[in-house]
Length: 450
Image (cartoon, rainbow, N blue to C red; front, side):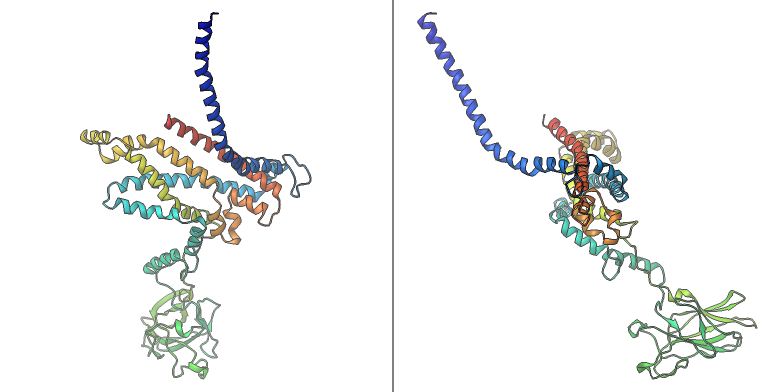
């Protein structure tokens, strides 16, 4: 090769070597920037996963190798199987409801004037931590209507359509002549019988002064008619306790609103309701012997609402709290997808005579299918990891009924079980359940990016 050829080869090789050197420098620089993140990822994710898998192969103390024994124990433990069942309910119900609610609200917000304010209000719960949300709903689900707002509403509606018992704490006091017989909570009946034209005084105790109706007046017996039985139902307790039991004393008040029945041969012959002074008249009675009865409905305990945190409803109640937190998230994401739909397709369908329901079913939903899928899968991943709401809202006695895999894992490992081998096995199972959904979501993102 001649000297000119060598010179040309050298000058051609120089740019190539320069480009290679530049690429190497860029790679080194990339490694310098990525290395801290990789180290952090390894310390916080990779190492715990590997350690948990290794720990799951040992017993509770971590001294004896048990192999797959902890995984076998998972399918043999009734409490763990119940947690798996609850997790399955969560995965099926919560993401489906959230995606449906998000779609419905995203479509509706496009048709209201204050759409931005409406979205802001619905998205605000996302700013509330699960701890705070759990405390809020634990109070809202309280059984006592005076504390739980949901039961206060339920009791208010119930009492609006159904009469409540007037005196749930009232009870009978034995008397020498016309005493009342019956167990606690009623019904109470006169020990003897009465004929028309006679009267009877029915004294009760156990009613607190602040529980007396505001319109109660001093007790006064009603005079009986020739074809009826009269009498009075009263609080047999004088102020200061100075009265004589079984007798209407000054200061003793009648019990208004008390249902009184005349019973003969097991059948109710007449019914009356006591007046403000406790008086009543049972009229239209044929000649014969009658028993005067105070039905048990007078003494029934007041309606206390729904036991939201009982064994039957605790899981749906917690799912309701989860919906309150995450509905805004689903609505905003679906709303963003809805805004990207070409409006000309919707207008063309309207011009062709399609109804709004047809446009929604045949155009809007199919075009939103990728967004709906991503939202659904994202919610599935979040639902599998739910812990805070279940642990905070569910009371201790029903905690096992509400447990999901995450809470069961914590309870087994640190919440009293002290079996970190079984807890590690549960964490590995939970990871294996979450990974497919994560992989699916990553692939969807890559396809949409491509």
